[in-house]
Amino acid sequence: MTHVVTEDCIRCKYGDCVAVCPVNCFHVGPNMLVIDPDECIDCTLCIPECPSNAIYAEDDLPKEHQDFIAVNAELAKIWPVIFEQPAPLPEAEQWKDVKGKRQFLEK
Image: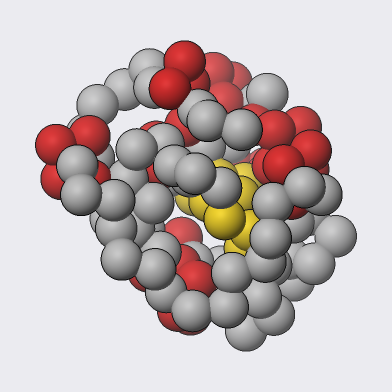
């Protein structure tokens, strides 16, 4: 099992999760973070740290976010690893509770 970042991270990219990750499994894109499923050790530390509630254990992933298993695996192969907590995107607070953001994903 791994953890999955969902569309709730899009246009937020808070990065609190990066600060607590013991194995550097997060990768950073233009407006979202993803988890490398091959690096995640299922420690669960990232889940409560996410202000936008965008991270789920794969077994707890809601049906509407199942496609983000593949999105995380795909983008983790092309986006760089992030080692330090980034500043959230300027519009993060405005977008934090918005649902249905997948059309805004920048690859």
